[in-house]
Image 1 (cartoon, rainbow, N blue to C red):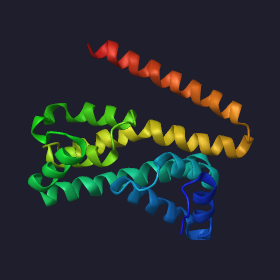
Image 2: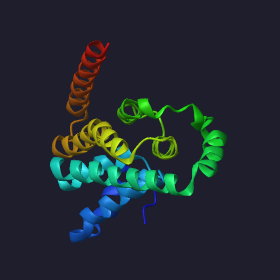
Image 3: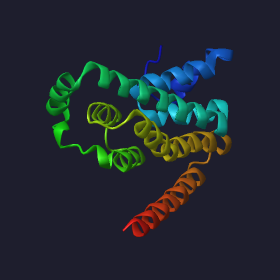
Image 4: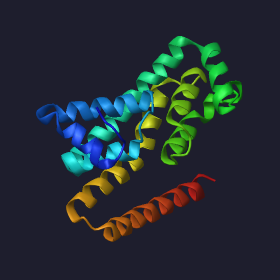
Length: 189
């Protein structure tokens, strides 16, 4: 098992599964989306190192999306009362104040800006009246940037072993993301 959640340990653990490694990575992304017991950034970076950019990106994106959808369905099935009580205790969130009409963009932004805990997004949407279709589409769009950036960082650092160039690439990607968000905000008003 993984003794620490360093990039090296996670990469070594996944790589030990040889031909099954992509399936194990997918499973870890799925688990991380439901029960975030280890950092997504390290897992996505390890996927970029092990599988290359595109395969690592797809594993990171689809695994996280699948896990988020499973958590959404569990929240919806287990019920509002149970989750409402736990979410208000842990995160101080009033699920009754969530307006499902703002669900799509709220989910997209919460996924893009990785400050809101993943379980909170999944559960709040599941019990907050957001449709499964809207949740899935918004999560798919919102997960793209983080999967892209974190997988790209792992891949680029593995290829270059140059932290300065890797960070410079990250700054460029973040600047481009900022410009896209600023453009969308300006045109949505």
